Image (spheres, protein in one colour):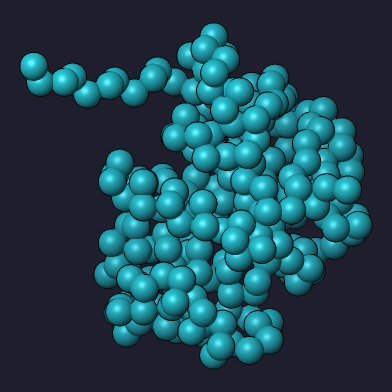
Length: 241
Ligand SMILES: Nc1ncnc2c1ncn2[C@@H]1O[C@H](COP(=O)(O)OP(=O)(O)OP(=O)(O)O)[C@@H](O)[C@H]1O
């Protein structure tokens, strides 16, 4: 049985459904990327899993729980963490305080020490106000906050948003480490080619519907679809002769 299963999910913010007929799953410790056109409903889909959609139909199950019967807080309590695209840290608090304020952590001091082991850049900046961190460090802090509760599923909404190519590499390297902590990852990413290269599987969304799903490598190998939905191939650097 999958860790997360969506069956016939539809929903939106007003009268009109933004996503429809969604069937998808995420297995334990998998990395799954949702890619697709702008406005296709990618972020809407992960908001549905966390309970942020005002209108929803269909079934969402997580580890045997019917998620729709649970509040967002209860979903967090059973092992789901969500890292939104913006406002995912408290800028006026220090790095350490950002970790200390995460609620419902069994042994907060121990877990903070583990987070500092996992993210050494944060350890050395523990007294720094989070608003003064670099973009990459902020994203690491957002991940560390999400990991404090030892989740089994982390929902990431565009972790590379607003980051330079170099910082994107760094943040993606951190994403790749998440399964080793026991968490599966369901991620929305604009830099879809890069993300699918290290994802176990992916779903391509167009106008609120899944149009294709396969392993990350198979989606990248499907040149026609990749060109259509994943943007142009990055230009290879020219070798000096
Ligand atoms: N809070 C909201 N209230 C009303 N409509 C919304 C809300 N959030 C998103 N939408 C609309 O839902 C549609 C899908 O948005 P969503 O953010 O899920 O798309 P996306 O695929 O993640 O897009 P992008 O790649 O451009 O971020 C868009 O038309 C958007 O305007």
